[in-house]
Image (cartoon, rainbow, N blue to C red; front, side, top):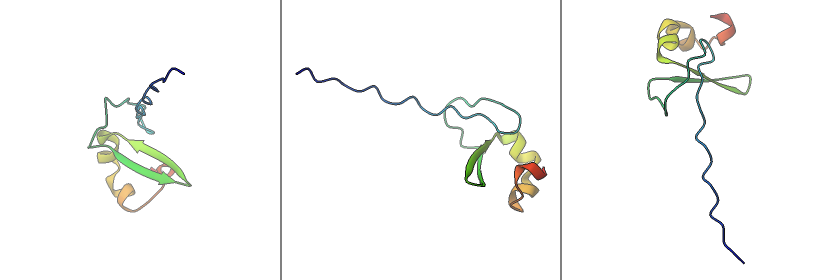
Length: 63
């Protein structure tokens, strides 16, 4: 029986839920929000522009 090395899974490609920017790697400046059980990622530009809504825990629909 030949042993096979499974391929490691592809890293998740992060896409900003607001503007569609695609992240290169895992950006430490992006924000993650869970809304109605769904995880959303926001780039640093969108997060900065909507920081008050994020801190107030408003869903992104309210931005």
